[in-house]
Length: 142
Image (cartoon, rainbow, N blue to C red):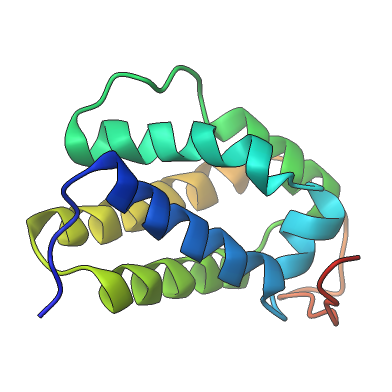
C-alpha cells in the first residue's frame, strides 16, 4: 500500500509526474507545449506551492489560477474532453503514488476545480471549432 501525501517533496513528486505525463499526452499535451508554451522548471515551484497550500496547509502560494486558464481557453478553446483528460491523468498519477486522506483530497479538489473552471469558461468566447474535442498529434520536444 502506498503512503499518503505528507510533505512538500511528496507534492513535488506528484506534480512533476503529472506534468511530465500531461505534456507528452496525445490529447492535451499540445495545450501545455504548443499553446501555453509551459516552461516546467519555471512553473513547477508555483504549482507545487498551490498544491502544498491545498493539501498540507502551506502558505507559499500567492495568485489566482483562473486567469491563466481563461487566457489558455481564449487561445485554444478548452472543451469538456480536455478537462476530463486532465482529471484522468491527475487521478491516475495520484493513485499510482499515494493512498490516504490527502490523496483523496487531491483528487476531490482537482475535480471541483475542473468543474468550476469548465462552468466559468463556458461564458468566455473561444475560437470557433467544428465542435467537440479537437484531437491533434503531439510530438514531445516541439
